[in-house]
Length: 439
Ligand code: XLS
Ligand code: NI
Ligand code: NI
Image (cartoon, protein in one colour):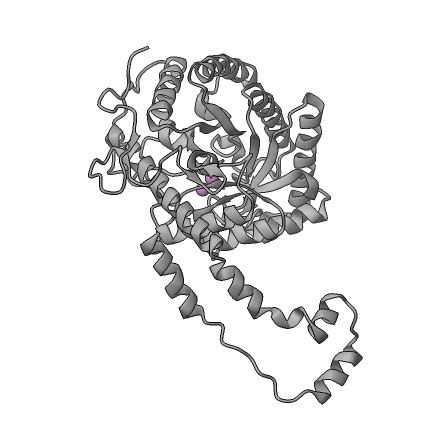
């Protein structure tokens, strides 16, 4: 096998004083934080679509990426060299997991039969690379949005033939994910949403989406696929209104269709911000509802209203994300998947390494800060005290469901002037900053 990135050797931890861009400054895989190593806490994954397949096109310009393989190879040959390059990349970076869509790893053939044949060949090929390198599959998924047949959506298409095609594709993607030992399976809504209500039957589309997910649950059971099912919320893009808007919306949908037991969430930072939430908000809502499953680690741009999928370098955000993940008791069997792409102008192969290193370091630092914040119970103690009125007297009775409106009236008529305490937001922000700077 030829080497694709000869200018890069295995990336090492050199510590925070290193000036070497191709080294970790904070991510030290074997360093123990609490009861786990950093590697076990963070469970990093590389995504195939942005890092191996993406070429850097945008609506105004052609691909810019210089990649160490020839783009004019026959489609299956190209698929194979990409896979080899992928495993060299992961090995040199020291990342244990990858994620893919069916169509990232193998090209479409003339019909579904040929397409599935291509996929089978590539799955065999990738399986042997996984065996050789020890790298594992975090999750698989089906691309139900790129091909023109999905113009009106997949499971929520107005066309039953498209529903059938999408079902066949998910069936195969589940088999392939199982074959490669995938620990999770992701449903991101692709084009499941609408552009205008003037031509849309939302009721039927949502019922169909639920039917589609139930079929996947049933088939997974039938073939013995035990990975965790994940839904990845997103509020918009590519459709104007995506059905899986945010965690709260998906929770309501799952409850309505009795699908709650089978799904957790894959939270993407940039999708949270598009929904008008912070990354922490979405992680937190998922966590307190017991559905925090995995993370697509990236970040958006505060000034741009689309899914820019930048590498996550904002330490404030990674700190609060790791705080939620630690409070969740970890992220396994999910992980931190870099659903992120280098900027179009960062077109050299070494930029791929630098970008991932930047993201891994930002999460490693976030992990350490979050661990210390939790160890010192900085926010916990404050929050506990803030709600202390619900642990005794009337508050306790409210929580225990022992009061009526008449009781409340009786109490309110008798009580003196109400006294509230400061929420001390600025104090807490000051303390979080102190931890970020000092840990
Ligand atoms: C798109 C999504 C997509 C999913 C996988 O915005 O983030 O990349 O993660 O289908
Ligand atoms: Ni994503
Ligand atoms: Ni995204």
